[in-house]
Image: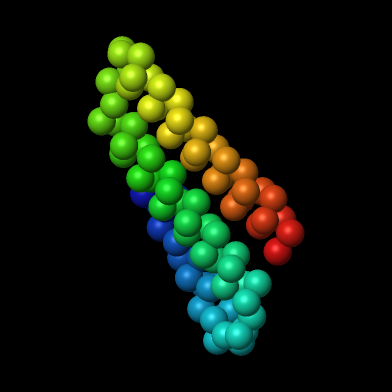
Length: 86
Protein backbone atom coordinates (compact mmCIF):
# COMPACT_ATOMS: atom_id res chain seq x y z
CA UNK A 1 0.00 0.00 0.00
CA UNK A 2 2.95 2.31 0.60
CA UNK A 3 4.05 1.91 -3.02
CA UNK A 4 0.54 2.71 -4.23
CA UNK A 5 0.47 5.87 -2.10
CA UNK A 6 3.89 6.93 -3.38
CA UNK A 7 2.80 6.38 -6.99
CA UNK A 8 -0.49 8.19 -6.43
CA UNK A 9 1.13 11.29 -4.96
CA UNK A 10 3.94 11.29 -7.52
CA UNK A 11 1.45 11.31 -10.38
CA UNK A 12 -0.57 14.00 -8.64
CA UNK A 13 2.51 16.23 -8.37
CA UNK A 14 3.37 15.61 -12.02
CA UNK A 15 -0.13 16.75 -13.00
CA UNK A 16 -0.64 19.64 -10.59
CA UNK A 17 2.66 21.48 -11.05
CA UNK A 18 2.27 21.96 -14.84
CA UNK A 19 -1.38 22.99 -14.39
CA UNK A 20 -0.34 25.61 -11.83
CA UNK A 21 2.35 26.93 -14.17
CA UNK A 22 0.31 27.04 -17.38
CA UNK A 23 -3.16 27.85 -15.99
CA UNK A 24 -2.65 30.02 -12.88
CA UNK A 25 -5.83 32.05 -13.52
CA UNK A 26 -8.23 29.23 -14.39
CA UNK A 27 -10.92 29.46 -11.70
CA UNK A 28 -12.49 26.12 -12.65
CA UNK A 29 -9.21 24.26 -12.14
CA UNK A 30 -8.69 25.85 -8.74
CA UNK A 31 -12.29 25.15 -7.73
CA UNK A 32 -11.83 21.51 -8.72
CA UNK A 33 -8.72 21.20 -6.53
CA UNK A 34 -10.46 22.88 -3.59
CA UNK A 35 -13.44 20.55 -3.95
CA UNK A 36 -11.22 17.47 -3.92
CA UNK A 37 -9.32 18.69 -0.87
CA UNK A 38 -12.51 19.77 0.91
CA UNK A 39 -14.10 16.35 0.47
CA UNK A 40 -10.96 14.64 1.72
CA UNK A 41 -10.69 16.92 4.76
CA UNK A 42 -14.36 16.63 5.75
CA UNK A 43 -14.37 12.85 5.32
CA UNK A 44 -11.22 12.50 7.43
CA UNK A 45 -12.53 14.76 10.20
CA UNK A 46 -15.91 13.04 10.31
CA UNK A 47 -14.21 9.64 10.41
CA UNK A 48 -12.07 10.74 13.34
CA UNK A 49 -15.17 12.11 15.07
CA UNK A 50 -16.95 8.81 14.43
CA UNK A 51 -14.19 6.95 16.26
CA UNK A 52 -15.08 8.90 19.42
CA UNK A 53 -18.77 7.95 19.35
CA UNK A 54 -20.33 5.13 21.32
CA UNK A 55 -22.69 3.54 18.82
CA UNK A 56 -24.16 1.23 21.46
CA UNK A 57 -26.24 4.16 22.74
CA UNK A 58 -29.06 5.74 20.75
CA UNK A 59 -27.46 9.20 20.99
CA UNK A 60 -24.11 7.95 19.67
CA UNK A 61 -25.77 6.00 16.88
CA UNK A 62 -27.80 9.05 15.82
CA UNK A 63 -24.65 11.19 15.74
CA UNK A 64 -22.87 8.52 13.72
CA UNK A 65 -25.72 8.37 11.20
CA UNK A 66 -25.66 12.18 10.91
CA UNK A 67 -21.89 12.28 10.35
CA UNK A 68 -22.05 9.53 7.73
CA UNK A 69 -24.92 11.32 5.98
CA UNK A 70 -23.04 14.63 5.92
CA UNK A 71 -19.94 12.89 4.61
CA UNK A 72 -21.97 11.12 1.91
CA UNK A 73 -23.69 14.32 0.77
CA UNK A 74 -20.40 16.20 0.56
CA UNK A 75 -18.82 13.27 -1.28
CA UNK A 76 -21.64 13.17 -3.84
CA UNK A 77 -21.54 16.95 -4.38
CA UNK A 78 -17.75 17.39 -4.56
CA UNK A 79 -16.72 14.17 -6.27
CA UNK A 80 -19.66 13.48 -8.55
CA UNK A 81 -21.97 16.39 -9.30
CA UNK A 82 -19.76 19.48 -9.21
CA UNK A 83 -16.56 17.68 -10.22
CA UNK A 84 -18.34 16.22 -13.23
CA UNK A 85 -19.64 19.66 -14.16
CA UNK A 86 -16.18 21.21 -13.97
